[in-house]
Length: 210
Length: 266
Image 1: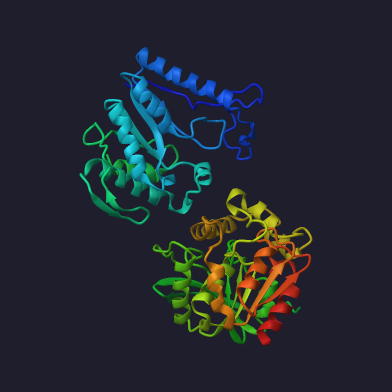
Image 2: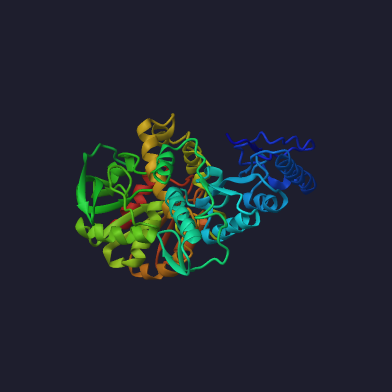
């Protein structure tokens, strides 16, 4: 049994009436975003996570979505980085980074390695394919979503586990010099979770990688 | 315009390494039609009219209909290279070509690569060039129905548009659209439906007689893109049709056929 603390970190703002229930609407302008409200909410959600760590939750769970009051956290690695330093014992579970939108997964590999090191090995690195709004917001080619997911995953594992420098000439990612200085603390690498709710193919892929 | 039905056939042919699904119909010299981002919609009035003078060749692009995919294809230039080889295999050399919208972009790419492959080039509301004024309508932010509504200036008043798209799409239609949208996404996701280099390589098309047809009210690819094509291809002719959106072959079918036939006869 693992008990984790999770919230979508919804936007909550009495002035505009946006309370985080609008999950699909692409027409909500960020002209309605109030950074003062954002400052309070971000800090409140971080305080909640830090408190959850203090009172004994096994895990602090984070995710990200784009362009929506449904989920304020557009960059889950920022939240995870702060918690890596500010909390002491709970696992930090990212559910997860959206691999197909990353054009430079080496950057992601090193960010995650830093989070793992700074937290003294408490990172659980989730990877997801993302939904339509993620492809739209970051203009990631949807027709290559699965190929990019799989290739970025394989690349990150190799970047974490294989001493560099090495080359990577893939279909979607190309590096002539892979040698990130930071390597994860957990060996051979942080645990990887694949949250999946709708894709049979992803479940099968995940089973093959157990 | 005569609308008597002309028989058409379909077949799967081996072409440049894959099975290609091709619709054929009419009598006379070959005329190649490259379909757009909504796929081949069936045998329409303009097909029937042109088929009285030409044998129409309408290949369903790789991944559409029963045509195989090209797994290695990453962009429109890859597709254009493949198509040139496929046209050789089909014996379509020095053939006149009509390309609409996404098919127009493809035709322009192929014509720039290999002008001698074609006899004449007709671009209809072609994607591929970034409009100097306005943007190419984003088909991936709306459902097909809304895209089709934007494709006509008066879809309610266009009988053939109503027949094709007036009611809820059939499962077959939806499936066909999914296939061709996947191709459209691969070719045009970013930059959206254009290639910044294209206007600069289009100079090679100057030796190929070129007709550019545009609906004045085109809300998918603004007329400014047609004017940009016209400037980029020295010697080309631009014909702008009034009361016409993105699908002149349907919305102004009579005038479209007249202009195209006249140009092909020239």
